[in-house]
Image 1 (cartoon, helix red, strand yellow):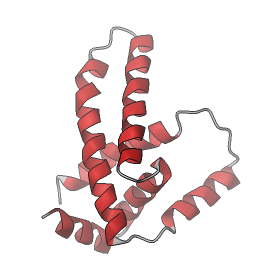
Image 2 (spheres, one colour; image 1 turned 180 degrees about the vertical axis):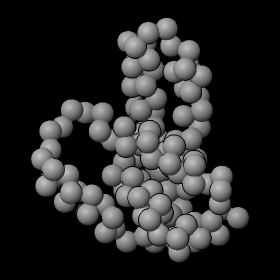
Image 3 (tube, helix red, strand yellow; image 1 turned 120 degrees about the vertical axis):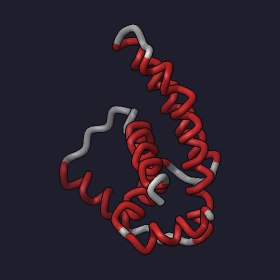
Image 4 (tube, helix red, strand yellow; image 1 turned 45 degrees about the horizontal axis):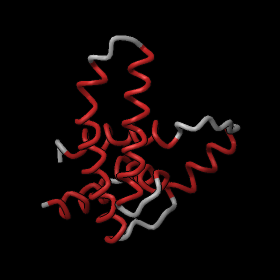
Length: 125
């Protein structure tokens, strides 16, 4: 479990960045409503299975681009690498049968719910 949570957090950072890559203006109230909607999704075993596939794929993409990103010679190059990684992460999440919003909602719930953390851990064993 100790290894799983940092992976979730890292995945969340990338997925959140990926999900917000398109410039969208939201008021604070809209953002709060969206966050509530995300955390209210029903977490089924099928959803968790899709999530685990997506999380694994996102982690692989992250690892693939991590060194390139760290070795970028300037901000422009780093941004291009990040954009390419985000596109691949979104594709990975979608390929697992989830939207980026669903993926992020599961991450939020797992971080907030110890029982759900345990459930996910049991599924990975």
